[in-house]
Length: 239
Image 1 (cartoon, helix red, strand yellow):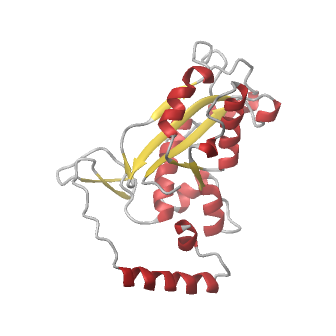
Image 2 (cartoon, rainbow, N blue to C red):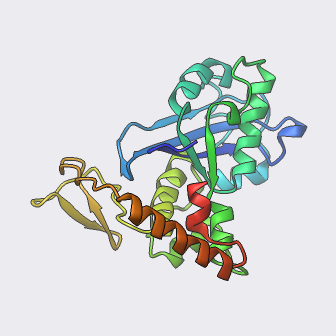
């Protein structure tokens, strides 16, 4: 599934294993269209109907008392599925979050099935390991490597981590990292060492490649793929 609409997603949970009954307690989603933040985000805290592991509370700081009056996953599932349907989900360590979402869907007998039925998924942890083999590739390490300021991240949080991952994803994939909705006199602002375009700036014109240019591009990717023993990331992204 190829789409210009991407949803950077993160969850916080009561523990590590959905198979043993652990639940999602926070979902944070950041929407990007054509590499721009739209401001149309999705964020919700959820009542898990079970105790949160002490180790998990130390990571995200979310307590059982805080969640006592929050909705259950079954209360928000329709809005959540509607928000992410048709998008490409960008997740760091995707099997963890997708596994928890699928477990929640299965638990309520949702007619939606599984995440793969309505979304494609890109795992930035897999991407990072391919780009930086043998190195630490957690979110903090990637922020440091790509010059992303995450000093405000004292605890994990689904929406905050999604916003940070959006920065990291754009830095990893190159090109313009145009996230900010804030504006300055010329429609461009500088923040955290990243050049960001205001949402008020007119979209840049799209110039399509000619057929012969596409053919030469494919030939070059084939050469790179052979030289790298089948590890050409640009070629993989086109499949």
